[in-house]
View 1: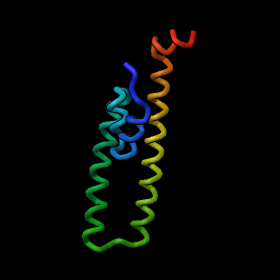
View 2: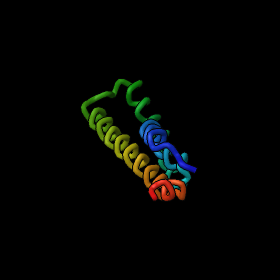
View 3: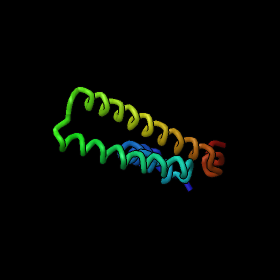
View 4: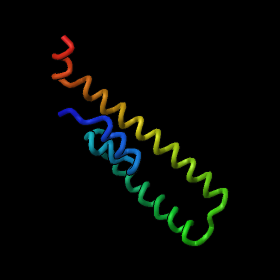
Length: 94
């Protein structure tokens, strides 16, 4: 079954690892990323609510954005590879 690369990318962007679970690839890795994402968000909210927002928090946020775009790109690429490897795609290429 073909999976939509855009959906995989968006899931990985907003919920680290959810795109991998959606694709059915790297499920264990995806679940670990989701758990990590939840813990990071809890920490991020705690930092914000305690008023400890400093330049260090902004560096943390920038690093998280790098992860978000990287996982989104990788999820998109994985879905595209799955589409290209599917039997239907190979028969249409002929």
